Length: 255
Image 1 (cartoon, rainbow, N blue to C red):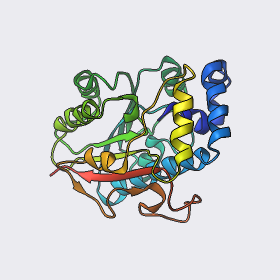
Image 2 (image 1 turned 180 degrees about the horizontal axis):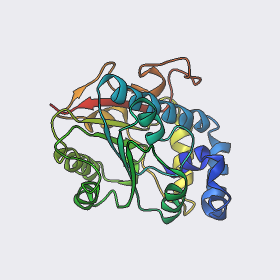
Image 3 (image 1 turned 90 degrees about the vertical axis):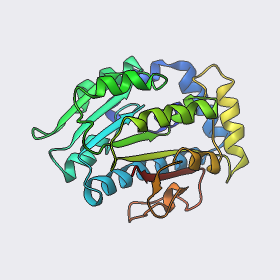
């Protein structure tokens, strides 16, 4: 998840270690001053993630999940949603942030029937991520790849698409990609706030256009309703954000 979204959506159990990151904390406060709507963007992104995992576990029958760039633990984490539907589900979390990994290993405990593992891995090295994930996941069976608010850490779009393709290439037919990211289509203040945030020295993030987000799904069969603002993707009663918002997402199936 993008740094600003992590700050807004960290769980109360994450503790005060995050607050020690003075640069990120101050930058996050400035971001909200320029664009208060970022709180809705963070909420919409999280709610989309939950609904997409529910779809994959309940409707698509996926029992394995690879969550790359998971961010700090919060409510309704991937394993909680998936194993709440299928207790035997296996989940691998991947992040390169030592703080995230410390909290993940302490707090993200799965069911006895399933497995939950944590990898110190870099999004920029998909081959190493896949190799390590193979210790827990069966790459002969479908896997749900989760890229939630993370691809903006790769500034160059073609490089970001290449990383996504490499991750997907290792997954068998019947696997899925759930991806959402921030845009600046709805509000110009979102881009201004992101530019200001990136200039502070905090970890920078690149917003994508909706068409660029669609491009991550090239070669996949998009699940209805396609790539749309996150609140419009299979909404339920939990959706409590504006319908049109600068967070777009979708789910695609590998045939």
